[in-house]
Length: 260
Length: 309
Image (tube, rainbow over the protein chains, first blue to last red):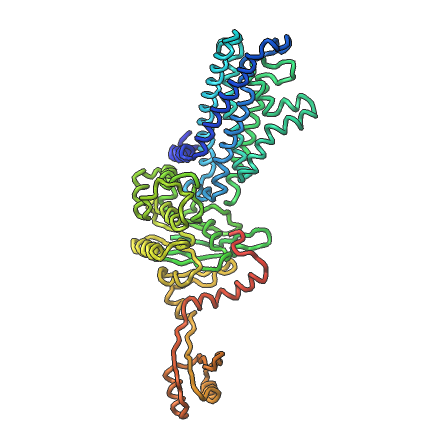
């Protein structure tokens, strides 16, 4: 099957492209610094101000989710941008013609990009998620607030947080193919993440729970569907799969049809 | 061999390529000429399956480009020298393209040597001059050692050394039996490189012939005559069937009579001649003569050059 859908050579070509792009390393650096740095900063502040915390806040405190807040948005956006540019930069420079002249079955190119970008960002996302988790728990250990990976929902939350990075990168890749302009595709991607929850929020929780941001928040917390009206884990997974599936399907459809 | 049959591309109401049919034979260099915006690039992109034709088809060695599993071994193409990865080195650019067609990594070093980029191979291609980008683009075309080469404006931005180098490369490739199809808009350059020429104007083939035939049929020759008896000489030559035009400085440009015959006629009437020069029309003139009215028309239409190309 891999022979038919993605020949190894095409896969190798996309892998060379990804690992020889400077923005790839920049993304890795920004992601690691943001996730670990901001995560440690937030948790450090929390530990320092612990005595000032109200009883309700203390009850609702999620020791896993808390470390994934601020810095992780930077990770998701940096990696999403990387996903976009792996496709849009080729359209912008005209290199897409060289690529399609070498591999006229364009879906093979697209499939190879999906495998390479998806695989690389999954590894990156998981490494950063676990590193952030362990760093955060080490900080919380001072106040004996830490949890282990074996506690309920913790492993799921960490794994899903890492995997969401891949989800976002793949949606970015698909948007890069569909929009073909880096700036436009990034705007669409950020809009999907930040604006969609606000717009749909007005229409009620059910619709809002279909957005990526809500799914991400649900998946990265250990409390699951809570009072804040978050979607359940299953719903969040389905929402992610639907967004990725639709984005990839549309991209695979247009990539064959358009002149370059 | 490249076979183009009835190829047509419409963008809305505008016809970029209009029912184009021609064959590019192996073993010779075929020049593909036309003003900017005449449809050359669109035609080449249709041959490579990048642009879907509205009608007609193009075959490379009997098959559509899309049918090739590893097309770089069948067709090498340079479409746009500016298409380089800004942040990637020339070496990694070539390595990724080679990998996609299962071409051995050693071939990358070979083509870098052929195009003279070995020393710059590890530098970011974004910092390359236009001449170096052209060489990199040609390296891509040569990667698969293909029997068919398709190059769009390969001499753009090259210095005189580079121009001579590409000319030699094209001639050698043709001598090896390859099909060499080169688009350009400089007739003078084509005259030195090509054996055969196809001229496109406003999306249609207006010339498809050998270079020799093109020079013979298209280039105008005339005779420049200077004489103190201009009006009398003019009347005499016109009476013998020549077409005479008076140039701004009073000299006569005579068409339709050989310079020897003009001398004899003038001597017979005792008319003094100060200068008698046979002027050979250049290929450039011939080319401009057939394409210029179109270019003027195009400008008047307000159609931007290169639109949709």
